[in-house]
Amino acid sequence: MKKVFTSLLTLAMVSSLAACGPATPTTTPAGTTTPSVTTPATTPGTTPATTPTTTTAEKPNIKIGFIALHDTNSGYDAAHLEGVTNAAKELGVDPATQIIFKYNIPEDEKAYDTAVDLAEQGCTIIFSNSYGHQMHMQRAATEYPEITFVAATGDLAAPSKLTNLKNIFPYTYESRYVSGVVAGKKLKELMDEGKVKDPYVGYVGAFPYAEVVSGYTAFLLGIQSIVPEAHMDVQYTNSWYDPVAEGEAANALMARGAVIIGQHADSTGAPSAIQAALASGKVAYSVGYNIDMRSVAPDAALTSAQNNWAVLYKATLDKFIKGEEVPVDFATGSKDGAVMISELGNKVAAGTKEAVDAAWAGLKDGSLKIFDTSKYTVKKDFDKTKAAGKTPTYEIDADGHVTKCFALDSNGDFVNDTGEAIVDGAFIESTLRSAPYFSLRIDSITELNNN
Image (cartoon, rainbow, N blue to C red):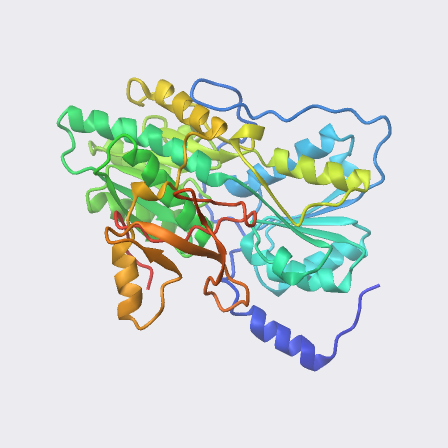
């Protein structure tokens, strides 16, 4: 079944793939604390995490392959694994006998080998859950045109022109924004009480990818909806999952004066460090990602931005089982219960639930535009790009507000050159493709180590 390529082609592909992304540890670091992961319930300050319930008269004739970057020790992977399992059950698919899970698969040649192995085992649809897997999924998709490959968080499906390669992603920027509202309410309370003078917050980011940039920008804009003068520093770890590095990044940000720290990184490292700082007498609070962090930060955790991946997996599998065309790009958000925040912590400010409910309502009825261009400027980045002799991929007015912006890269040179993202005075995210493409660096955010 597997097609054989010439040695020259194989060497060329390996060479090109080696530069696509960093390898990821295949084992869980010792000493990692792993909170239990459960499907978020409908609680005050959250959106429902339910998906429509259906019943299937007969068990569908399907075998699913799943490639996970880590395992359930990573909150991100746990959310994916729980999501695909729940989706399968709702569709009458038995996870124990009809899903083959592959854990701790790094973003390198092993991802390709794993995709091939799943194809050879008879899987008819194969998912992967990390951005760096997608190049290897694409390579496998070219060799197995009869199998559907779905790369979560990927952005290569449409440009590849392969009919059997797909991308899915939730509107993560929505939950990031709402978690920012929670942080903003706390920041204002601290300022009103005289405990904080400088509205300075921090963010632990994995990589300087659009997925991360979009999320942390939405987070700060949520904060600024409550505290307009708030500003933020971002510290990258250059890893999706590294508890030690994430804890160190949080400590570095707190040492600089950050009082609330968000994250786009997959462990409990940052919240644990923030809880320790709070216990020592510092003013320090955490906004996590993927899972409820109160088990490791019972007082420091305000909330976490979360994804209900079951919504996306169910919609994709339902179409596949029915023999319908699976969309090349599929994304959805709060209106379908695909994103949410975890239960509010015991230290949130008064009025937080009301502010959260108002934000969700605005997102659902369309009155709230997260990336409203009147809410931020990008003059520093624009001037920096021109000073480096490069042409910005966007235009600004005299005040630094974005007026036009290319969203997509059509030729793989990492320069956006197509797809107008500014519509009616707002940057439209995850509509031209499923994966985020907001990569503007706004003036109130500083990346500390993006060299």
